[in-house]
Every structure is written in structure tokens, then in C-alpha cells.
Length: 428
Image 1 (cartoon, one colour):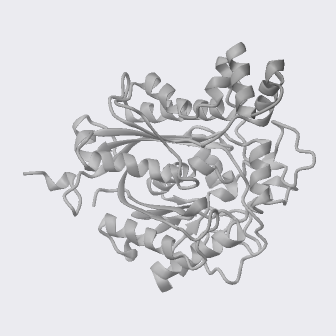
Image 2: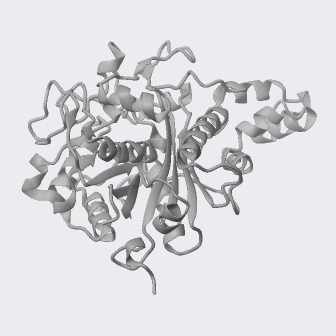
Image 3: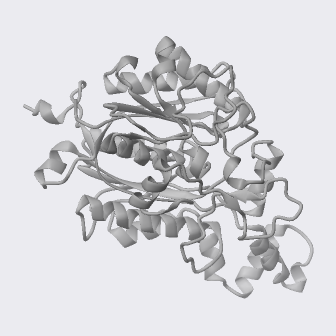
């Protein structure tokens, strides 16, 4: 007979978080990030990695303090995930081979423009005309370039992490847009719930800020163009919000069954209590204006946790600072929580770190657990011009003491990828 101290309301193993690591534009490591986040510091700055002349958006939350061997998105994303995984394993008290599966959320990047141009210039004269990919292949055959090859295989990030940390089985690389980090956590939780493993390593990383990324998101009218001052650009739920600020970062979580964690004397930092994920077929990039899929996602997470809406004491909002998405998220939360919504603190980390895209769901899960551990609600900064159609307690501008027993974290991504997590401090 199973011990119900270690199982949830459906008889599944309770899943604990025993280690966390994070990198954002605010700095490296959980301690520095949390200190900056709760003090209302912004990591948004002018872009210096590449020229921004002629671009409508010239600001970002890039991570420029991690050394990489080649200046491309794959190397940056790998380096961020490597460092956050080291931090998470150290906090979990694990060394040597991890001996559990790896689930990685990584950006589905292609070679950056300067790399493609350089490869085209190397194309043999006999291939000067014709299909671009044939020219690229001819250039690679004539002079192999291992650095470029690594840069075009974003799946290699998980393989390198698996080799470095001794994970078990074939590593899984996934991309569900802005919900990716939360999706990776869901896969790790389900692997433990299904009895396939006692522990799972979950990482989400994104180092993909480039000229091409800025151009593509600008064509969607998704980015803020309020470049000066940079730190004021991201203003979730404000009336004058005009788009998100693209950013970079990573987070890693060590997930274990509560039974396994306690058996080895690990400290349980929090519990991943409920998961919800729904698809939205409304549009290639826009979320359904009526919020139907997002509403269903939140409700699914609560149901999976065995809770109703009354148990949530804080919401880590998706809060991108785009006009449509903020409005849709508010309407979705209002539909679920009703009149209580005015009194539930719901702040957005993106007001300070920007939108870390693929990494966002995991980064915000780490901050959600840290909120419960410290009894501190991080603020939504730049909240000086409230949107009268969005009645939220966004914890405006200044942190606040608070001890939520359960937190909801939302991740609503491009292409209709919606994911919500319910996390608790204790396995209740």
C-alpha cells in the first residue's frame, strides 16, 4: 500500500522541486536575480551586441556577461543552460551522473544572417547560381566548419547537456513558443507521476536575440518601440503599453518524487501540484480574444492540482506588455476567479527582465517558488498609468510582503500554446 504522504489526490507521486538555477538580464544566480527583482530593478538596456541602426526597437534584455566560444544563439543558449544546471544541481545536493531524464526547452533557431552570408561567400564558383541550400552544402563539403555545424543544430544543446551532467536516455528538446519552459516542467512531472523515473532534470534556455529576431517580431507589431529610457519600456497591464521587450535567460529545476527526495535527505523547496495545457487554433500568432483556451488551461491546472480557485494566493502573470495579450490574460483570469480577482496579487516579472521567450515559463516557475519561500511578492514596475479596463492588483512598483500557500503561473505563447502551473510550498 502506498504512503499517502507521498501521493496526491489521484494517487500519483507528489513531485518536489529540490534545486533551482536561473540567469536573466538581471544577473547570474538565484540570489542576485531575486535581490534585483524584488528591489524593482530593470535589466532592460540598449543593445550593444550588434548594430541597431534603422531598427524600430533598439533595446533588449540580452545576457552579455556569459562568455561563449562563438557568437550565435545555440552557443549562448547552451552556455546559459549549463550554468543554471550547475546551480540547480548544487542546491539539490547532487553530484556525479544525474541518472534521470533531461527535458530541455530551446529556441528553434536557424543560422544567423552573418553566418549564412559568410557561408554563401565560400560557395565554390561552380555553385554560384542555383538553390541556396545546395550552395551551402557545397561550401561545407569543400571546407568543413564544426562551429557552424553546431550552430545549425539546436538539438545539440540537449545532447551536450546530457553528456555533461550524465542524464539517462535520449534527451528531449521541445519548443512550444512562449509556453516552452512550462511545457518542459510538465514533461518532467509526468515522467515522475507515471513511475518512469524518480527524478528529472528540466531546463529552459533562450539566447536568440539577434537582428533577425528583432525584425521578425517587429513585423508582427509585437515589440515595444519605447526605446528611451530602456528600463521604462516594459509596462504590463498599463494603458500605454505598446509591446513586449525581447530578452534572454535560462532556468533549470531539479524535480524529484517527494518520497525519493526525503529519502536522500534533500530539502523540498516547493511542490509542482497541478498542470494545465491547451491549444488555441484562433490564429498563427494571436491568442483567441475571448480567452477560451486560456480559461480552460487555468481550470485544467487547478483541477489537476485538486484545488479550486479559492486556494490561489498569488499569480505570476504572463504579463507580456502587449496590448492584446494582457487584455486576454486579464479576461481569462477574471472568468476563472471572478470577484476575487481584484484581491489576488498578480504581478509580471517581465516588467523587469523582459520576455525570455522559450525560457520564460521555467524562469517564472523559479520566481514563483521563490515568492513562497521568501514571503515576498515581486512588483510590476513602470505601473504609473493603469489601464482602467484591467482591474488587477499588480503589486505596483514596489514589492510587498505576502505568504501565498499556492501560486498560479501562466504562460500563453504565440501560436496558441497555453500552459499554466500550480505550485505549493507544502505537499497538501
